[in-house]
Image (cartoon, rainbow, N blue to C red; front, side, top):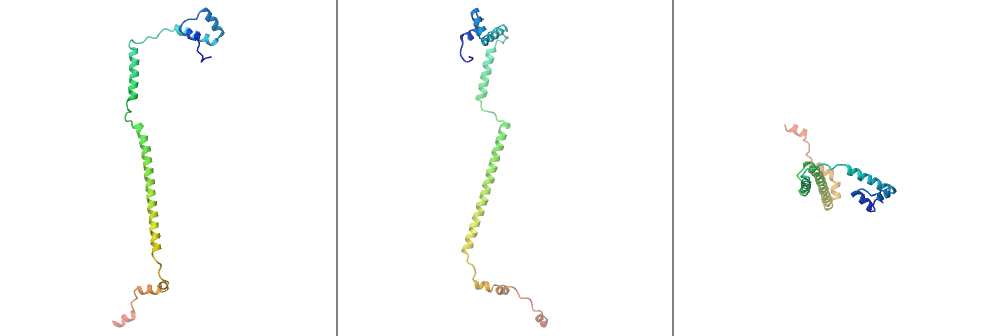
Amino acid sequence: MKNEPSQLRESLWRRNPTDAERAELRARPELELEARLTGALAKIPDAPVASNFTARVIQAIELEDVRRSRPPVWNWHTWMPRFAAAMAVLVFAGLSFHNYEVNAHRAALAQSVALIAKAQSLPDVDALNNFDAIQRMSQPAPADEELLALLQ
């Protein structure tokens, strides 16, 4: 009932109801309440407004339009969190890239060591059998104390 248009409802907003309309209002309490509200509002005197009220309202509307169309001013409170978030993302990306590069370098080093290990042949078994003798030959012999004593 509230959404459907009513000529009686609209006429109550504009003028006082006639006797026939008052009888119809008694049957419809929501309209009677609306008629009493309209009558109470009609008794309230108009508020005094300045002579330039319309000009001031239009000026306020234009000022609001100018504010909305103007690009925003540099505001540290707005940009600082965005800048901090961007820096955090960049630092995280940089550290991730550095970690990737270090791991790639280690993998390349491991591959080159594996290639060198495969390319170099193992020593002969005979050389390994005589390893102790060869190692002793490379060490200097201790001085012969008896011979040194005879020479003096």
